[in-house]
Image (cartoon, rainbow, N blue to C red; front, side, top):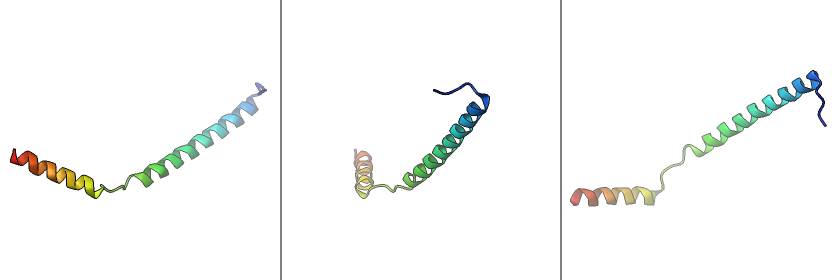
Length: 57
């Protein structure tokens, strides 16, 4: 079980803060990979056809 030694707690806190920084960096990299997704061609066609239909109505 963990002790209440301030040095141990400080080292653990420092490690947890480092882990948190690493996780935030990894999350940012993953979000960047997902960001430039382009629109699927069938979605673009469906929107174009709906706009044309709405305009004709």
